[in-house]
Length: 252
Image 1 (cartoon, rainbow, N blue to C red):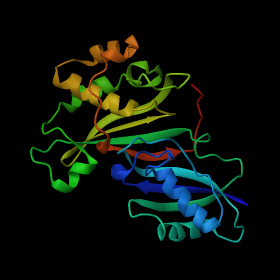
Image 2 (image 1 turned 180 degrees about the horizontal axis):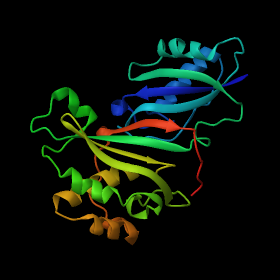
Image 3 (image 1 turned 120 degrees about the vertical axis):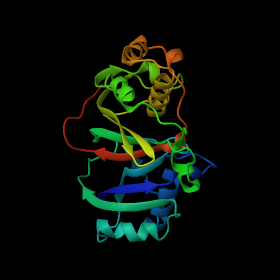
C-alpha cells in the first residue's frame, strides 16, 4: 500500500462544496467515485479542508491510500483525469509517508478572493469574481487588513453554526493588491472557520465604502460579536490557492 498526496484544482460552480454528501454533487464524492473505479474498492479521500458550495480551488490537497503497489504516483494524474468530470483536474501526485494527512499535517492554507472592479465586467469573469463595479481605496483596505495578524479570536467572523471548539486562528498574512481589473485579497492562516474568509472580505469592503477606518475594524474584531460583522462576500470569487506543509504547525 502507498499513501498518495494529490494536488487538485476545481471549478466549484456546480458543486455543493467539498465534503461528501448523499444525493448531491460534491468534489470529494466525485474523486472517491473515480478512485473506486481505479482501485476496484471503496477509497476514502481526505482533503486539506472543506470548501463551501460555489468556492473554487487551484491547490486543494488530498490524501488517500492506494492498494496498487506497482502504480506510480504520477500515473494517477492521467488515470484520474480521464475519468473525472471536466470541472475537476488532478495537477500533481506524489507518495508521502503512511502517517501523512493532507488535513492534519498542513501548516497553513492560503485563499485568494477576486474582486472585479470594472464598470462593465466581462461575462467569462462573472463566475469567478465578485463584481463591485467601483474602485475601492486599497490603502484604507490594507490598513484595516493589517489588524489581521498573529493569533486572533475570530468569533466576529464565524458563523453561528460553526462548531469549531476554538475560534482562535493564527493569521500569517492578509493583504489586498491590484491585478488588472481585479482587486485580490490574499489571506494565509493555519486554518479557517466556516465562511470566515468571505465574512472578512465582505466586512472590509463594506467598512471601506462606509468610510470606517482601521481602528473601527479592530474594535469589531475584538468585540467577538458576529452581529457587528459586515456583508458576507459571495462564494464565486473565492479560491483555495495553496496548502503548505512547511514550517511550524500551530494548534490554536
